[in-house]
Image (spheres, rainbow over the protein chains, first blue to last red):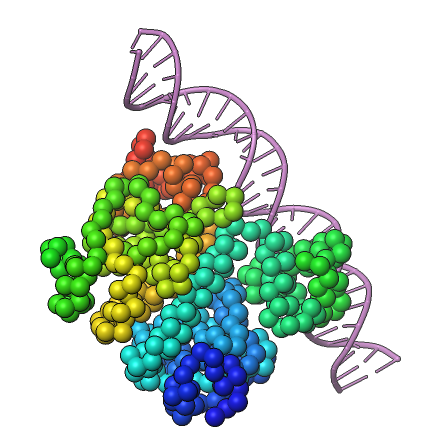
Length: 210
Length: 210
DNA sequence: AGCCTTGTGTAACTCTTGTTACTGCATACG
DNA sequence: CGTATGCAGTAACAAGAGTTACACAAGGCT
């Protein structure tokens, strides 16, 4: 049994289920920045995150991106889950935010476990619940906040997910995630720097007080 | 057994489950415009829609609203469902779009049925899937579309849900749903009228070709 | 009829965000 | 060492959306 599996999910699942996961799931890793799922992909399995973080992005017909939310250890991607059950293609893109490892569980086992293990059912429902909440938060963010507030939230979230107040992104990368332009981000970052909320260096933003 | 229950869910659930729903659920109705669930309410049960349509709204801290999506016959509100299981308060507001009737299923039965009936599990998962998709669509709409495109989509959706190309709303009501101001809506509606896509009368918009 | 309320049309202005264009700086690399 | 490349700063402008203010029209009520 992977010790990481035990560590991340031991308190959630009974021993028997953990053994099944260990037996039928396959361990996979992805380096930071690596694409894990692409829009339109058929989803072969469901990922259980062990280490690292994944960012979930939506894309429109023009190829414009928008960050929806992050997933961490102990989470799964309910969108993926949803796709699995519906046998449909992925509606989102998943990119490793940091170096990650996760277990891919085959679709076939999921229905079986849902009937068999109460803890699995709870996990799945809980996961849906979290994802819906995060979608709501994403909606709140883009519908009700201005760019400057969204940017602050972005930086806060990013620092939190990476457990590092230093953010190593270019303005352009941030602009992609937030579906705006580089100039706008540069402008607002400079404003935040003047307000002593961050400090700016090349390829590097340090969060001081947001 | 309510004939409407049979009609709306007969093809989804086995006879036994339908009988349980009939036995433990309570029939409720709401007139168009009536509030069904308010943000912060404790959710007592899960609604199975029989007739009519419900609109689901999100509100920010300033009381500004935003329409998320509509629910129709055969649907349930996965947000509610999610709240039930988590024993948390509602994060959304539900308002009857048309005169509606639905069956309220008590929370206590849901866990039981999830274990007992495969058709119920499928329904619940399917419902989550639909809701996530609709949330994604809502995000696409506000993130990637301009006001004029959003307004056209709104009018199309509204006409479809009400099965009536005549929309009996004031510009102010539309503005609330779309989280913008009345003046903006009036301006854009007038533009659409000049483009021969709609015709405008007092309290009444007729969709011609959107 | 006269009055009031509510809904709509429109102009003028502001604010936020997006766009274009150009600058200079840092780093990598031949 | 000089040059290419990518990144960041900034100005000037354009476009979209929100705000304020006011006129007027429709319909209900006394």
